[in-house]
Amino acid sequence: MAWDPERTKRLLLDAGVVEFSAHGLAGARVDRIATAAGVNKERIYQYFGKKPDFFGAVLTHQLGLIVDAVPIRGTGIDAIADYAGRLFDYQCAHPELARLTFWEGLELGTPVAEEHRRARSVDKVDRVLAAVPELSREEAEELLLTILTLADGWQALPNLDVLYSGAEPGDTARLARRRSVITTIVRSWAPADASHTGKASHHIGQAAGSEPGVNAP
Image 1: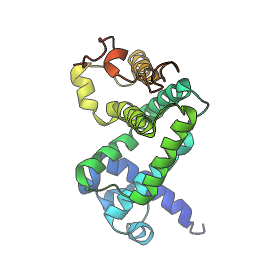
Image 2: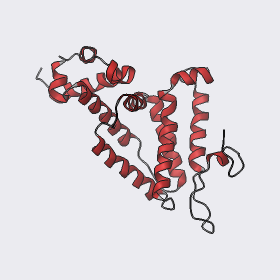
Image 3: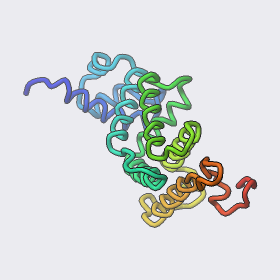
């Protein structure tokens, strides 16, 4: 069989996401990745460079997959709520990405592939604004960060899930409730009536039933 460099890269990226999401950058072992991929470890250095560079390539590849798989569709706050729900579904099915980003935050001082990812982040904020133009740019940024935090949290902090809920992995009823909470929170950012401020009503305490101006616990 002819040597296929692209196939080799895919095998290494797939093995890398499993290893890095489980052990982080410091704990991951190149030997284990190469063995899992069935590839000589020298190919990692040839295609991706040193281990930190490979970690960056794995994370960037995973981010590209989610951008393609979970686009923002439609307009209005319901479109953003729909996006948040689908993002939660994707993260539940592919928890590795959330864990990779948490490891990145713990172990690295700056984001990997920062310039490339910053451009993608700006584009995503632009898409939120295109769907809900009544939002200010700052509001769109905060809304998107809220969505990402809620969608990622359960995947990156599984032990808290065990301690607080004791839920079995894949408990569909609990997952459905969590999805509903996320979409409800997103809808609480719906722009106010045009006769009012024109800004978004995004007080999480109010969405949870608290009185306006009272912080939720």
